[in-house]
Image (tube, rainbow, N blue to C red; front, side):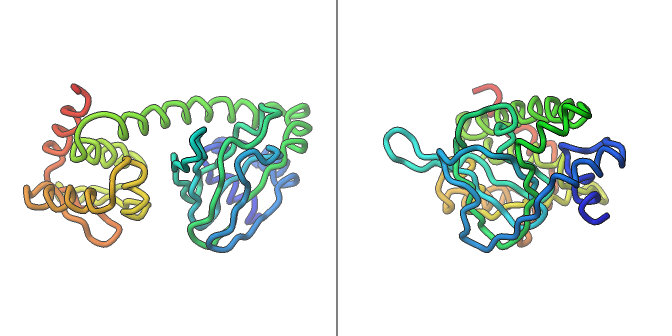
Length: 231
């Protein structure tokens, strides 16, 4: 039952009936990992995809000039390496554990057999891939457009839809990633991110409290996003 609950709470498989979830659980393999462990490397055979239950995963790849670039951080409840489902190619990135945790592994062969009997998980996957494309488009804009403050604002406003609460006109936002990871995602140095947060604090727009951001002036933060969009 615990395994079914873990699958149910993922975005990819949300909305599936209990009998569909039970079929998925039957092909699922639990995989525990430690900090620094590599779940798969770039160019390894793509044998399946994963759902992160706990911990943190960094996805990165090596360019033609042998430079490693991080392009995503995976949080609990998110899936990764979904391209293995529809591709016979190799993994296009490396998955490195930044913290100890656990993932659920869905082998490609078992998943293919399952959807021949029951196409519902495949339909969910197609919709999820569309979501991933939109998410990657947003991340590209975060990295490539505007100054650091406006890119940071774009990230924070986008994150609000996922991990935030509102009380007495203030927005409480869980960052979900370390500042170093955020800096890598936005393509800047960590010191630059810290200076941008300090500037926003000095302007009375927000305040960082450990891994949480308290937004005092949401409209001002959104104006910075608009600057990003115009550039």
